[in-house]
Length: 275
Length: 255
Image (tube, rainbow over all chains, first blue to last red; front, side, top):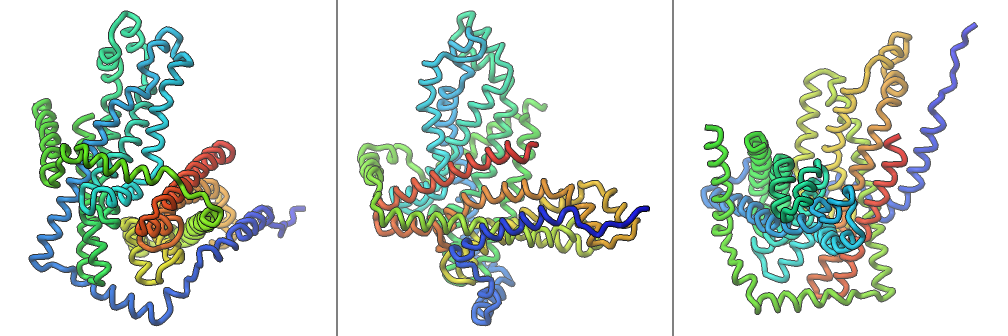
């Protein structure tokens, strides 16, 4: 006879998992000083309420719109100029770091000699270093080194993105069929020629779509970097936040959203056209 | 025709690059001049001797723990609220709630963490609490959307079977849907946590605690030696997270 078991087969693992997570997170509450009650405390609520109620209507007087337009253009320009500088560094670095152009690999079934691997390591290490410091930290450092303004943002994007692009490019070169390049190398062509005719035709679509995607990321990053003084929409947003100008913050946020949406559409168009 | 269009597009990109440099007024020649480079070199040199005194290391350890705690709690809160919002967003309670919750999720996700942090510093005061809340808000948007998609893609048959046998909706969800969904949810949560550790270490720039705040303060006081130790600590944290996550992914998620 069938009896309906009342035992829950999943209760023990789920309970243990919950208890483990609680035990690990309990000290975290102390460290992060987590206190959700500040959100409903009356004084901060009235403060926040006043700030948020100023969001509507968004600031739209003529001078502010002009300021907004300039900041938006600056953000776009920072992202574009930063990407251009990043490419200047990323392309040679990726060629140096990639195993795809190794002469010894061409005659050793794709495995470069130990010397070849050893000599590529400094370039790889440099790329790792460039991309593991977050771009906003670079921006903070450059603001101290070259002063407030868009130059710091451009340099920060150039450095971080050259690390990322260099690494990804090198991996893309290695990921495609190596035989055309190996054939060219073994029949005596130079490395650059072997790259241009053996590898580039296979990888160009992927390179382009990744670069355009990164440009889109650079726009988002340049907005955020403004908060440490690197120009663009972010800097304006930081100023407006400090002045508790809710309407200005609202229009800046709206502009930011529109900018991200447009960049998304544009990058989709570019990828569709160019690949 | 197609070729012509692509050519025009490439020319447009080139023009945009040149226009950006002109608009920003960046003089690369002046930036690369010897005087400027010497100045930058001198500035960089001050970072080369990190401050490794025990008291500073202790402060950094505390900052790192704060960063990890902020990211972990922020992700956990986001996972709970994300699941709560994902249920209506996956269309479980009719379309008015579906579009409303989608709107909320999109709004939460569209504002970057750093902007949330700046807002939360206003609302909740300086310190890691604001950072935790900011991470929670942004991550709720991201996780809610991912959870909603996962919910839509799980097979409905197990839950339907429980419903047909007379189980109520909560049981059907817990024993019909959740077991299929859980590995995916965990993978998403871990992935976001990894992102959030990286983010938490820079949220301090707007006053939201953690390693970022230490870096900002010591750079503002021109204490480059201390600042370079903080940067080293950030790098170690990021590498540790990368290693841990790739190891745990191979170990558990792939299986």
